[in-house]
Length: 477
Image 1 (cartoon, one colour):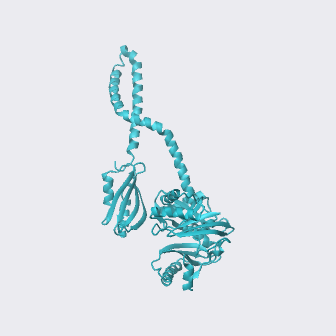
Image 2 (spheres, rainbow, N blue to C red):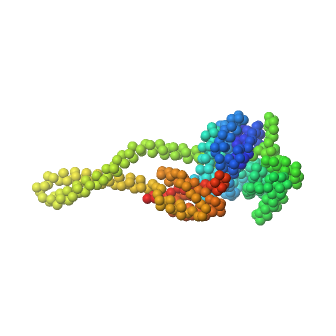
Image 3 (spheres, rainbow, N blue to C red):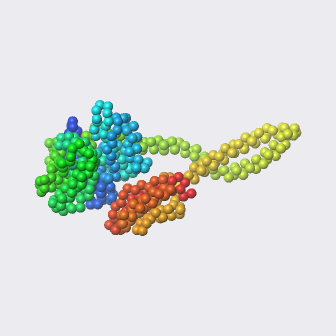
């Protein structure tokens, strides 16, 4: 049995499932609503409220908390459909990284799985996903605090596409599936059963089924226009709805067709109450999948651990180097005094009476060469120390120079080892944020500017900007 946890908006769902052939057998389902505003679009916006909730959710329902498969619905994941020859996993990952070159970030993780194969040795269509490593690390830390072990991390889009691709209703059919989740709806377009495109929309009119249906039909109309321009194999004429509240909506609006997931995700005999929709079970249907996000994180952590162990082995040598640097000034003065004496000895070397002092001269030269080597080592150590960035008034001027009207910035902390500047930034108007981020990215002193979106803070009536800046080598010197 595998426990899969789904997080996206207020609805939190956990399922205990088992794969049986090309179907998923559901044994138990637990779902509750998280505290309002604690999670939005897969981003934990209020950890103080969400952490005790998720602890209580697992302990109160006695849900197994080891090797949990986490499925996150968030726009932090970037998905693309690509077509490549059949290559090794390593070669495919290199090609995928090139396709996501617009991200221009070092800390990006990539994964993929196969959508369709054409012939025995022909091309293959894959769905690739990219996500910032820091985003996933925040989840690992949160679940570590909650005492929940994660076995894998996947995106909601990848899970749903796999589930729909295995559905007899959708295979060999050009259709659109809309998945309701609270105030959001995800729309998934399939071309003869093969995933083609998806998007998420915020729902603003959800007070009555009539208003909700009108908004869903409006989204269907826009995507129908999009599909007609894509040269699909068949025209888009079939639409399905599913998810939270879809059954009620179907009763009020019979013209909307419900997607029946039971043919793929089947309820077990022991299930007492059947939920509206099982969101995350499709990850078990991913047959050919590249290296997972969590495997990549664990591999990098193992590599960093080895680097730290090597550093600790070299630490005594570094301490000696610091002592050499402290003595460099004294050695320099001694070096020049001895050099002057050597010049005097060289002038008198032709004198036969001083031939006996030749051995003393050669010994002094050896000492001078030793001093030179030590001074060079000290200078190299000093240059390495000076390559670390520092935060001074010039760096602060660059940051404040990027601020426009309505942008406020408060410095939180600065990590000298990594060059990362932690700061609180806010804007009165969200339209000012893109200009502020663009101005920061144009500054030469920053090696990277990582922007992960913004959230509205009721307490300050402003938009909190989530941005982390990393200084370049030697910045502020």
